[in-house]
Amino acid sequence: MITVRRQTSLGLVQDQDITLRCHFPFRTYTDPAHGACGRLRVLNIGVLSANAAYRAGPESSIDILTWLWQGTLSTSAAGFPDDRLEAGGLQAVSTGEGVSCLAWRAGPDGATFLQFWFLPDDESGEPSQEVRPAFPALEDGGFRILASGFPEDDPEEWRDIADGAPVTIRARSRLMDARVPAGEGARYDTTTGRALYLVVVSGRVTLGPDTLAAGDAATVMNQTGITVMAAEDAVVLLADTAASESAL
Image (cartoon, rainbow, N blue to C red; front, side, top):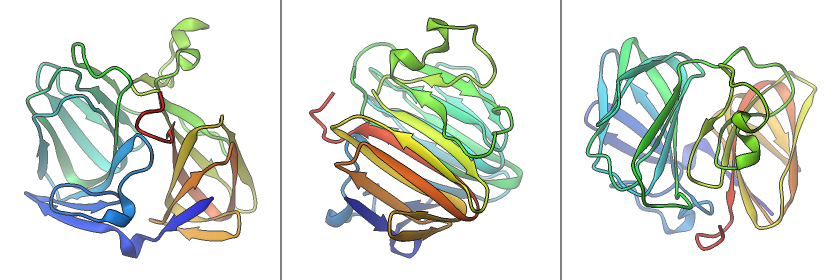
């Protein structure tokens, strides 16, 4: 089953110096019709003006992944060194028993980012952070794992860590990206009991009978794989997580 979410239907939260377009309920935005996608509880598109900051916290028992689409972003999480993201970079914070404050500050050209909040399998333990300031240029056509809670995706298990290795999270979930040229496709296969959430960052794609433009998204349930076809050059993000809160 595929359920399409159009960009025009997303929630809106204006908080401090940031504009958030929300796929699921967040802060002042409520929407019983779009509660979550399995253990993916929050997905926000954040837009910061030049040198503006966005703050959150305290937060616990959640994995927060921040993927930068445009601009530059300085990251700060209490107890960890500050870092900096370039376009395509990723910060992952597993809050564990608690992180008192998290902050993201845009550079002089502003910043646009997507932020995913996953329920972790293990809610306890010390907080952790892992950052990839930028990933290597993405090869056309296939899904690449950016973050994962699956041991088999850990490069330490089978090869030396490289700059493009996925970050490790506590949620048994994956976050992936793909750059698909016009007229070509990208395939992803998963297992039963999973929920997939696809976001079109740029371009236009087809998913089954539906066409999705930049900013649109789709929930895919009760399927063990999807094929995304690009109607024009496209960049997409894909989350794979347990379909229900109790399914670990």
